[in-house]
Image (cartoon, one colour):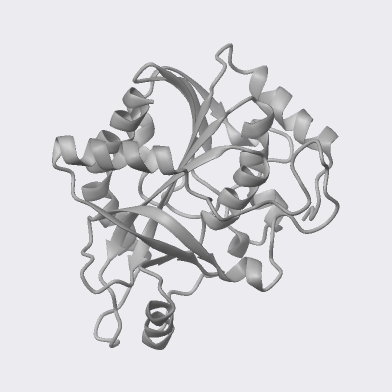
Length: 278
């Protein structure tokens, strides 16, 4: 496991991607568990296996295909990361977020991150979409940050500001699109935990008390790296299961993947609308 990556190693990975497509993406899209079907909407697609990219982290989780799809969607040239790696799989934080750093070096300016998340807010239902307004970075608070270690000022500042992690204008476009198409869109705070175990009812009650609306095991490290590198970010959670605040239900990964079938059509409409309005 490599904990820290040099600029030269990141450039090596980026050059591998450049060599496998003639297209120049300006928008990156990261797909969470069960949401990979959104990549099917990309036109004139170049398919890149992540196994061909030096230093790229592999995903071992069902519902994460492990490929890049580069092509056209709603007038934008996009790079879709179909399947992400997670810290709990044994990767270092920098390795898990290396794809976002490579997107930065490829010239991508806007990142849309999606995830499958568990409901904390009692009004959320499986199949809902939640536009992320802010996040709680428990892993980062404990020192597990992808920015730990030597800082390369050519990639970003030593102490990046995170007060506007999720771009206001992109969120406004998402809300406008949701209103025009009658897509139900919640808004809330996402909290990232280390996983891979799902949360206890006591965990969820605590997280609710500190202001979290949905919980997952990804996204926040990627957003941290994206903002460090100056990318604009929009985040959307697909709510995969109901809040289990009293321990009356059991959460499974199969449930998460099944909820993705309901979430994907709405997510495709939302993302396409935002890209069209950008």
